[in-house]
Length: 501
Image (cartoon, rainbow, N blue to C red; front, side):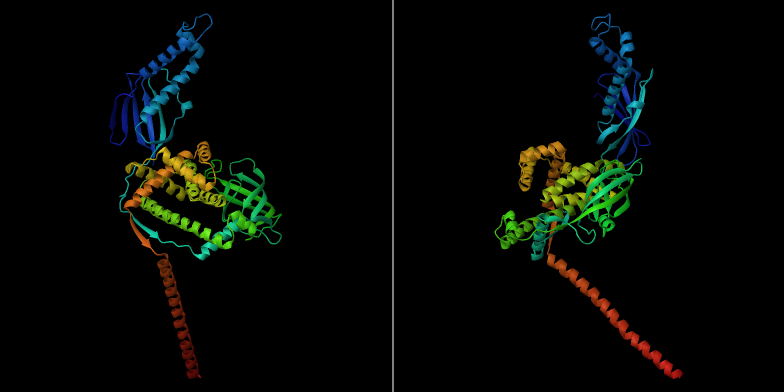
């Protein structure tokens, strides 16, 4: 690319005259704001540039084209234009559009590709070719101070009740789905049902056939997120039919349902409940322990490690909250929707790194998919902020670091590192994984200079307990005072009655 002269007019519009390498003429470029994180780019390609590009294209075509009655490279241009005119004109147009748009946006931090409507643009018979398009750009903002961020860290200890809950969860994971012989559907059940869904703009309903549904507060019927699904199906029995309508979030990952009203019909065929496994010899053998005592010890060690990770996660969330609350910029809805897929991938990697089971992972992901528009905006905002933080702190991630983290994950998941990396590369999550590793390094760097205050969980509990006791005492005193006043009023009323008599 050659020289570039930029002028800003009174309206704040940037006008750039850009010199193309293949031409002495310059394109005229105007860049205007078109909303949050969006620019409108208008380009005028001079007639001379078009003519030179056309001459070069036909010159190249003339060297290769073979026409009847002419040797290779000897066919006259007028015949080439007659034979290949339409196709060649389209090639010239696309080449000019690509070169001009790339040069015009080279200094913009664009997201995705420019939205150029190629089919609506034609090379004019004479004069310049004019076109415009909109492009989404990264938001511009200033970061808050990154040193001395106030953070609290809770000292966490494993309680016996936690060990009990963890072992109960193990029993459930090793349990069996058992037909529910009595009663109707309960929360946590598994339902097999004939399902049909119909989006508001669809001509016919989509019959999914027998579908497996997990009854949760925020569950899914097919690909559709349904809030209060447990209440919709509560008490239903085999043969019952339930219907509902759902307003799918505008940021939902599946575009065919995004922002639409969807009617859902559920005809229940079978109901199952999860029967936990018994704590017997077979269970201990599968867990790799001798008895219940050893199972509890191993569970306590695992929980302690998880609590330490939880403490780290809490501090990370505080850092994120500080950055989001102290950074201001707008995000358009279409950017939120387009980035929803990659955000879900990043969340998936984050959950995976916490060592959750597959069932826990799926449950968390279901809730994330059904997340509100505000949550999606906050996640996207955090992504842009952390990306800028990484640049400011000069944080980079090497291939060795990525491979090391993959090896750790593979070990926790019982897989081979090379196989996990291949799978990530295949499903497109490897790049997102690298971003997650870089973000973790950013958090670690900020925590080095953070003002960390340790908080005892007992103090929190005692404070909450004291507050509750104070509230209860206040209510009791109020009731007592009210009870004392009532007899007095009654006595006064009786005395008055006797006087009247």
